[in-house]
Image (cartoon, rainbow, N blue to C red; front, side, top):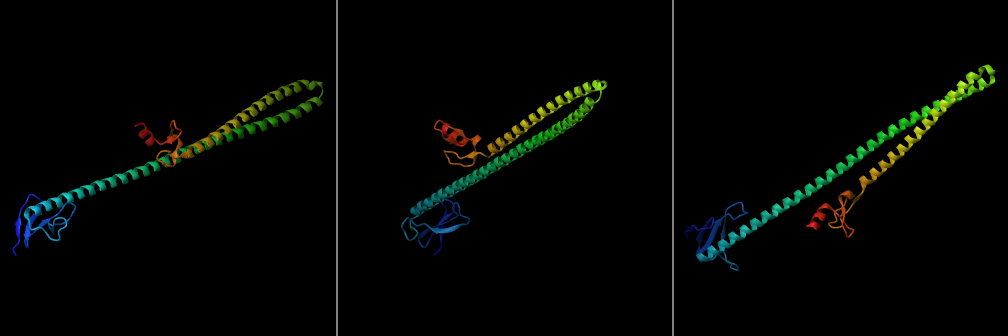
Length: 236
């Protein structure tokens, strides 16, 4: 039988084949044109009624549009979720890099301070040793001066005066060495404190997110620790 084609308001074309209505169209979400029988719900064959055929076609078109829109929404939601995950991974990587850099800078700073303290302490020790050597030499001179006759008394007095000066220098050097040792101990304590604070992390008691630096958590009246996102959500 010859196929009769009729144009309707819907896309594609409705046509009658063997007294049954068919629709040739590319529905939303499809890649090619396809002919399909316009079968009402529960029917085995395409309808023979033109009005019912158009109704079935409109229902098929609307259903395809809804499915395509839903697929697009789900695709956009998936893209947003992936973008959020990538952004979170980026933030974590940047945070880890910042902590590592700060730790390296603190370690380098303390190492330089420690080396400077050790160098100063070495110089002070050398000065103290030199002072001790000079005291010993002056003591020998003093012993020799005592053995001399009274005519050497003037030299003895001068030697004793030099001895006092060197003793003062030694005392000053020892005091300086003690101060440098104290600075070194304080620098090591600061290093330990800095290293300890750089490693402290905790989990958010609200969303459960782990490995958050403690300085980024806030304690609320209930005693719970909240991350910045949960804190903003709580405050509305």
